[in-house]
Image 1 (spheres, rainbow, N blue to C red):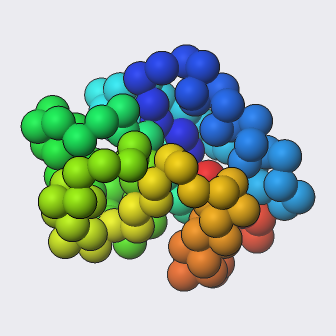
Image 2 (cartoon, helix red, strand yellow; image 1 turned 90 degrees about the vertical axis):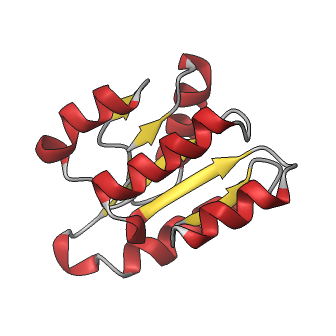
Image 3 (spheres, one colour; image 1 turned 120 degrees about the horizontal axis):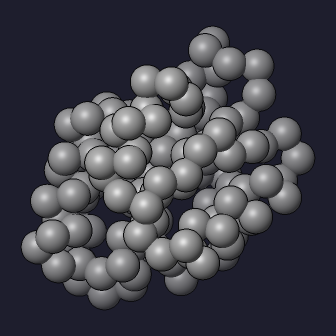
Length: 126
């Protein structure tokens, strides 16, 4: 599942993930509220939360998302920059990737995260 407030970013992430063999995006949301409404119905294996910057609102959003869904399968994409913010996200026991990283690193990270939930599904759902 892909979460980002910007439609173009969500569409780009969805296109990227679905271009990888065996992967599919089961849902997308523009806000935390919309995500929560879909969560129980979709049961994604991995949630990609794309944050636009490292401000206070994003920090609160990351904490809320980790609490709602369970941090073991939450992958947060952030812009390069604030190392303190990145450290805070890592303390939530989430996976964090910088948006400047190569897309293959995103694919590997999702595969690794999915491996921990392999018993729930037969294919890779994001």
